[in-house]
Length: 264
Image (cartoon, rainbow, N blue to C red; front, top):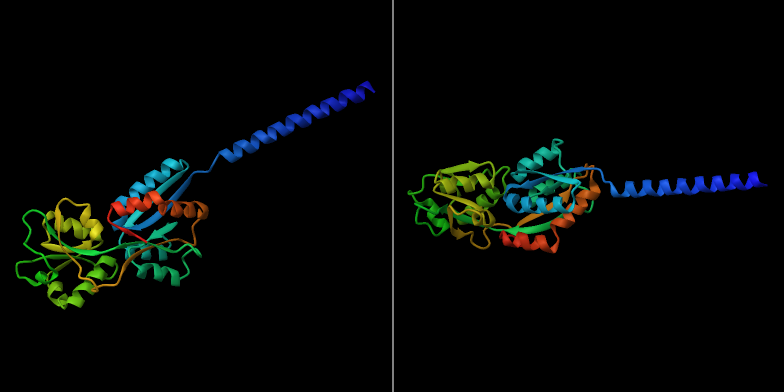
């Protein structure tokens, strides 16, 4: 009887010890998270604001590294179509997002319209021409006008739409120089390499070296909407969803507004 009692006590102790070890293991498992590298392809015009948002997200999620790839929306679209590494895409126009959507490359239900922008005419702040309207782009005083390359750069597509509507596209194209993205257009005007250029209002706002000469007349181009979506092939769907929700929280809506974007 005594032996039986001792055996029962030993078994009970073993059971308690085993459960304690298992609970400790569960706690350790739930508190430890695998590191995640989240790749975000974003239009060049989003560079400054997205860098801020990414840094804040990493502070709140130490296991996540946000890696940005900035460029023209057309070039980013092509990279994604060719198998480039991307979990999310933030485009400066609907056209590029539509192309990915038609090819079935977007995760279902994740596409949303985030922001709205506008196109402005800029000139160098110091020593630039006395320009105050788009019509002055036909002046012989202007030798080089910087535009986004219209095949793949949304701001270039909007620019051609505006200039066509104003009836001055051919005159402007005769002295146009084409940038690979909106930031290159901005840089050319800021440095004085171009006499004028067409960029987004948000890009003009970050430079102390350019002056906004005029805003694109109302009705000369379609609405400039920035859509975002998660890519279907992402290996980090939950993290991508969480990041997209973070981008659109109230704090970051205020941040976008600070940079001149109209939040949808």
